[in-house]
Image (cartoon, rainbow, N blue to C red):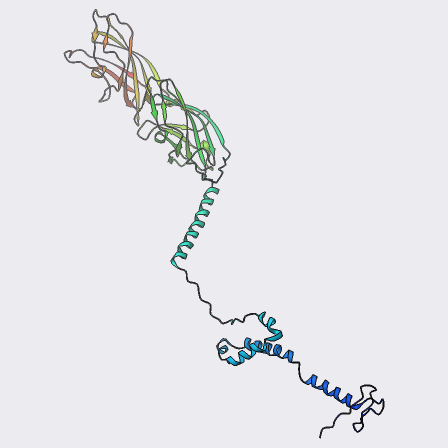
Length: 412
């Protein structure tokens, strides 16, 4: 049988004797002491009713958190209702603040892309790619709106070489080299060469051409490249001049002095101009040889005064491999009547070997007045460049089979 521990007086601490009504030491009433101890013991054993809802609520939450998703449905409705009711009263406000419980295993509904969303996404991707390409092209120096194209440094080489073309005079003034030319809409950012030219027309006819057709650049590897830009088509009235520029795409690692400018279409007599200062282009200049060939034809005294070799005449460039022979003649009429010789296209011929040529142009009069002395005119033939020995022949005309004459000459 368990022993009851001794009791002590709370006033003086002396052991109590339960057979008496008062403490034997200090005289305190024993009934008041015993009732106080019972009350304290009951308070220690029974928790406060006010704490019960909170304790139950926390236990329920802890229990629910540890429950798997598939067991939540097995919680009795009544138990959940009792837990909800236990959170009422003084703890109702705190219960409302508790966070809503979500199971980590709750399945999320996947978002499906519709046709509209895919189209919008593709448009966004295309826009971004287009913006990147546009920006990259602008950085490379292409003349695009929104990008300021900067002119790269320009190196200028003075050439000052002149050649005749189609009766006009073309002067290659300078050659410029740069990474790009901002006033060229077709400029290449990898390197450009610009040829600055001046054209003069001393003839009495209007001349015109396009450098896109007659200008080429010979590269160091002998390849020919065409212009990518010319500022204007050449149209020069008699006695006037014009300035032009022609651009070629040439990498900057190729020096200007390594290049040669070609003037003349592929089917024309061409001239090669090295792009160096004071280039020697004398072989393309007209050359005149003074002559004194005497002939008697149609009762008139004819003198072949000179012969000029050239690659062009007013308004026309010689054909490939050919040149023009321009013959200057003087005529004296010692007859007592007008001499009507007719068109020189009918009776003048130029021969070399077994070939006979007809004039391409002439200013010889068709008639000569009485007493005319030193009347001049010219006749032009197109001849091979490699032939130098020729004979000018006056052939008989209708009704005068025995009248003919000739004289020989050389062209340089």
